[in-house]
Image 1 (cartoon, rainbow over the protein chains, first blue to last red):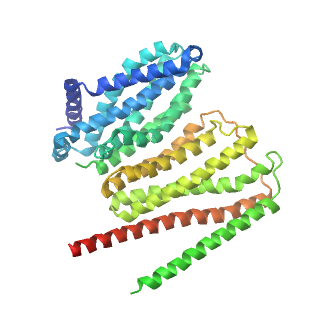
Image 2 (image 1 turned 60 degrees about the vertical axis):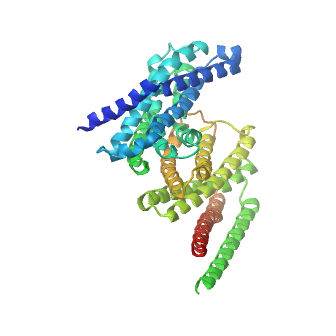
Image 3 (image 1 turned 90 degrees about the vertical axis):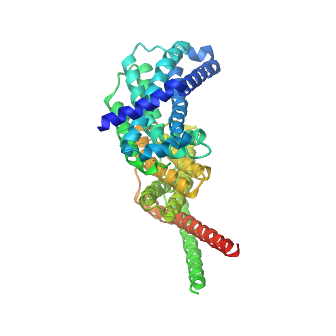
Length: 224
Length: 230
């Protein structure tokens, strides 16, 4: 069986479980909407009129939604010792990592597809100056974030604190992604500066480092 | 039979080590306050620089020790590496806090604000957060092996994060002054300040490491005694 076929089978398994139980996507979308509503209420109409609140609110929604997502997709493997079975299968652990990453990314992109238009509307954010730049920055940042979250979800899912601990671990490490993407969004939407090569290069460097390191380390941390 | 004299020798060495560090720190403080000239643009508050920069370098050194020890643990799975990483992370958090506090004092004197989201302050804050979180997650993970594993992976990724934090923070608007021109006396004081600060950082790390090893030995002895009496 080729690596691509293995990758597809493992990702499809996760997505099939999600389609049958519908527990993760529903949860992260509702959480994302609640975050947008709470921040919208907290900021009030005056601050929303001069608003760059939407990217900040969306970041909070993506970060916490992401943590729930990473936790749930790995928790599935902990039920009925499914992970032990998966580890006995003739599949490279790097492929297991990539499949989990892909499942998490699909769920996070689904979260973004639902919550972003709602946040943009509710928080009076004008996306028209650079919609493509906004999508590119958020997508690249999410890839790096999902790479880190997938790595740490494996050992943390076996602990008592699970999601709480995962959030404490992943959020500080993901701060470079938050800093770069928020600075790029401020430049594009507040200062009307087009997307710069330097900013994108740092985002790509973050993604490359997080992906390679996570892929290498996942093999060492994956234990039943 | 040889452990008692060895312990006594180590205790004397440790006392002398900390005494020497304290004496050197006192000498550098006197040098900074009474011998080194006052910088023209910043005034006396610039003298905080002699503690700020050595602390920053030692924070990075401690972070590097966490990185190396974490790799060591993942390769050999020996508790000594985990103990070393934990001790170095404690040094990184302590010296990171000194960098942050001295940076804030400097900021208040220079710009009238305790905190600005400038690249260097943001970098110091994120660096400190990374190693404080390392210390917070340690007691949160049950089981010695799993704790060491989670912390080793975190220690590696956190160190690789340091240049990324530095690069990303540089995108933020900066109000820091450019490089400060140092007189020869200032350069000498700065070099001298590195000695006690580095000794303190190393001492803190090694003491933490030895304490963890001795605690581990005592627990093992206790378990053995219980097994014999059962």
